[in-house]
Length: 109
Length: 130
Image 1: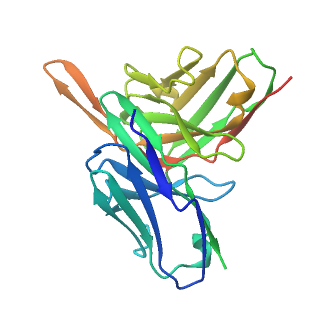
Image 2: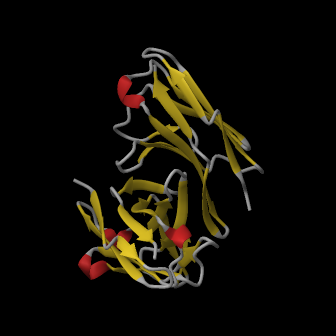
């Protein structure tokens, strides 16, 4: 099975900062990768699909890039409401299998 | 407004069963593949199961295979998760989620494609404890 890793596991940044999270797959997954935001007690929210496409309605300060095994998620101009845990997630169709990274907790200083 | 609302969670003893429900509104459930995903206390998100739009294709995580069954009633706009032989490590918040995927008919046989979750519910809590 394909394993997903994320780094860092947590970070603390100030409002206005640029935050970068990396996600690595144990083998080539093309661009079959999504990014989610999850706040405690709330429904997870899709931010980026297929590695680099912004989900409609999501602010443009969120972005994603990468393909193959290495992916990057960026929050530019960090806002107070961005405090959450962020997950990358690989989807596979042969057979259907959905693997989340361990998550990155983002705190606001 | 697209919405998913889970119900059926609670406290259950090890070895017992529980059925979760997920009511969909604001979109046509019958055209959407659907998932169950869970989050154990202090842990990350874990995919549990997926079902095709028509209910004819199901897949499970190894951790629940043979114990959990995902199903759907499109006439009631509802997704289900039947959980049997529950264990303490099944304790989690369970979320239902819609998949972005699609399907196509090739010479009378469906091929199902799943692309991951785009809409999620708020979750229902399952606690397995004696």
